[in-house]
Length: 78
Image (tube, rainbow, N blue to C red):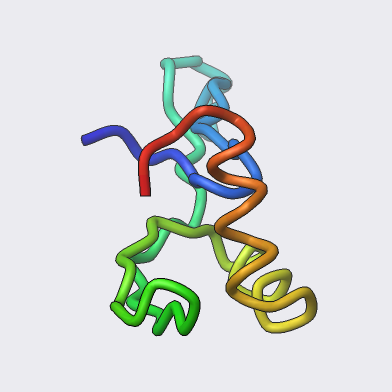
């Protein structure tokens, strides 16, 4: 499964590692994506979400119901 945040859509970035001798090789900048389990009172069940650290703070601020509504509005299944 790809490292992609369900709420913010954050994905890996690509760049180059530059050594001391200035040789360059490709690398990926992985987002800090974590699996989280939240209680969804409207459906009386838990939902499991893959969220970045920033999205976890966003869920704390706007609430689980609003976050799940945003994810579903994008067309993702929860």
